[in-house]
Image (tube, rainbow, N blue to C red; front, side, top):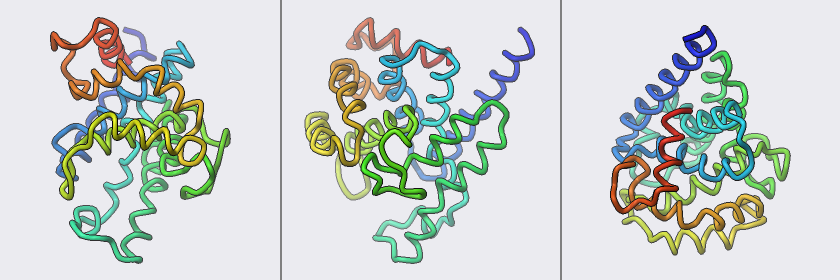
Length: 223
């Protein structure tokens, strides 16, 4: 194994460990970070076959919320609605995450996804109010997947919604919250994503998953 492979392997292991640490701290037992990372790759494969770009998109999606490590438990784990001051503090997590990951050699593009993951296609997000193609491809693809996973996962205040309900919401927000190109990619990969959502992405030996989905999940393990 050469030096570059050693560095990539160490960076990947560190990224996986950080994501797992955050999921544990947030009491997220369903591996949210891993799911959104592998699901985002499904869309990314429609636009690029470049291994390094796919790696950056995967890491950016995996570590999107890592800045929440710097948010106090009283805010991060609060069950009720955040007050104004708490909300302002919560909104600092993209910058906090960026400062963490930008220090890791070879994760510059991933760090940009982390900084931008709360932006919207129409410019209504934060922290910089970026819009359209000011947002990286990975950021625009991730936005769709993050909403898909949030809606199809159980939350303390509601049960998981169906894939069809999530699909309808995503389509309705095309051109506002989401890039229409990313939404079209989501619709084109609907069959695969349905299977991966049902399996929670992490069960490649499940007999109910198609061969195509198994290959995509295998690709995740090689990033």
